[in-house]
Length: 277
Image (cartoon, rainbow, N blue to C red):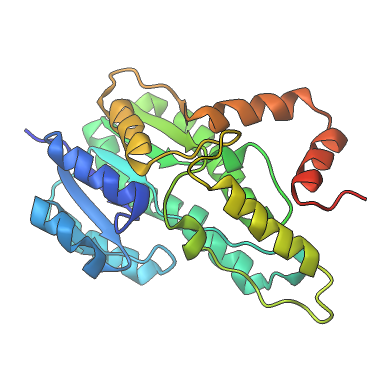
């Protein structure tokens, strides 16, 4: 019998490539995202497609009512959905901060809660959270996003401990920079009066553009399929790793952070932003 896998954020990027790859490898794929229209190709391939907005409790409930009307249980949950809220702390509105956590953290937890009762009943399952190297370090201008990814790290650790007695595996896949529409889909707040962060904002966006160049040798950019392959390998393993770092950047940055003092690391980030005095 085919294993059933649910993938959030399947309308583009890593999520879409993962849905295609799992379908090609004999899984029954449930693909969910806010925009169903962007998943028509997945439906054509044989995936079951449902609309779900992770920031809306009613949307999550409605989607799972439909999913469980068609499927008895879910073997593998891939919590992939997420976006970046850029901006400096003083200029971020609380509504923007809350929405960042609603999608990247609380939505992830709520979806996980919806699959766990049936996984516990079956005493089998695998939760795979898609984290980021951004859960290992923080840069000015993206504190909200980094904080959400740090939170995913912690919740993943808690889940792994809490679910071990039920034979439910928990992993986190942590890619470095990925060639997707992630930056285009990220949001930015309006500048506050006087725009004191104007130079930092300009330099931050320039830094992102430079880092995400496909030919960047210092921070090599991954293709979504590379991350999808790592997710598939993790899902197929009988004894999966708890943390899977994908790409050189994801493996290198934690080591750099560990070896440097906070002040030295801050200096490196500020230098990348072109803001060292």
